[in-house]
Length: 162
Image 1 (cartoon, rainbow, N blue to C red):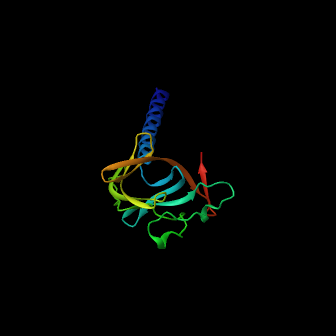
Image 2 (image 1 turned 30 degrees about the horizontal axis):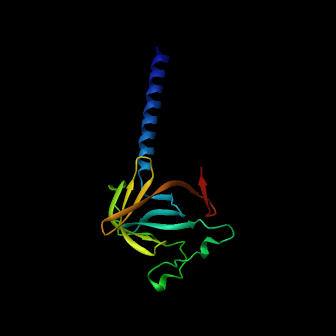
Image 3 (image 1 turned 60 degrees about the horizontal axis):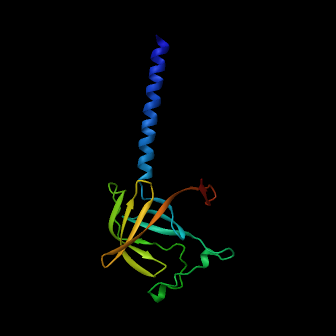
């Protein structure tokens, strides 16, 4: 009798912890904050004061080219054309709130390829990707960013978790 009760309790706790783990993982996968793989870079989205920002952390370039040497040469503002793209914030105007982690609307995004700022919306999709939408005069285009798991090592370097 005692082993039946012990077995029942053990199964209950395993199911309970599995359910809690599932809830935690689903909440984590809905967060906009984190590292994202874009078509040309790795971007870190995080809270910056009371807004969301997206800083370019790495740029994919041809072998032998230093990513830090890539400049914001397409920027419409002449005084910004000589700044390195690494470290540039792509997002502006997205207010940070605890309740809106899956959809953020009415912000702006900087497109370094065009050197322009567009109205923007951000959506976490069911597959876990971040849909980044840029709009101009009612016409919108988008790109899906894929989530990356990055560990910051004790020495400050970062490692990608596969």
